[in-house]
Length: 183
Image 1 (cartoon, rainbow, N blue to C red):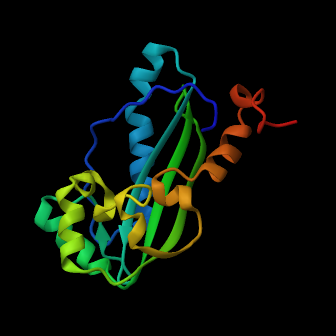
Image 2 (cartoon, rainbow, N blue to C red; image 1 turned 90 degrees about the vertical axis):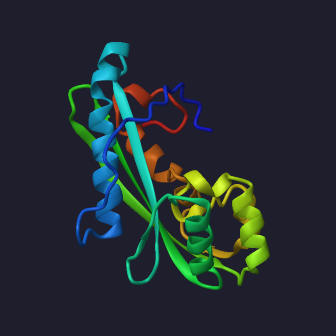
C-alpha cells in the first residue's frame, strides 16, 4: 500500500508475555525483539531499514488474547468478545542496520463486537482464519461482520498502523524520496 519493496521475515522469538506485563508493553517489547532478531538477515541482504511489529487483543482487565492454541480456544476467545468492547494494540519498531532504534511506538484502538450467535462463531472458526490471529479474528476478513464500531486506527487493528509508520519512515533518509517523505 505504501509503495515500498519489502522482504518479509518471521523471526523465531519467544512471544510469551512476562508476568503482569501490560498489553502495550508486551507488543512494544515483541516488536523490538523481532526487529533485533532480523538484524543478521538484513545485514546479509544489504537491507538498511527494518520495520517490525506485533499485535495483541485484550479486554478491560488487561487479559491478553493472543493467537488461539486450538479451534476450541478460538471459540472461547471469540465468545468472550461477543457483545463487548475490547482493545487491539500494535507495537512497531523501526531500526537501522546498526541496531539504532529510529522509532518505537504502540497504537491502540477500541473495537466493539455485536452479540454473536454460537453457530456463527463456530462457522467462522471452521474457516481456519482465526487460528493464527491475535484475538482469534481478522477484522479485514470474515470477522468484519462482527464489528459494530471502531474507535482509533483501523490499520493498527489489521496489524500495522500505517499513518504512524509513514511518519516514522519519513524521518529516515532512505525514504525521503517517497511522496510522503520529508519535503
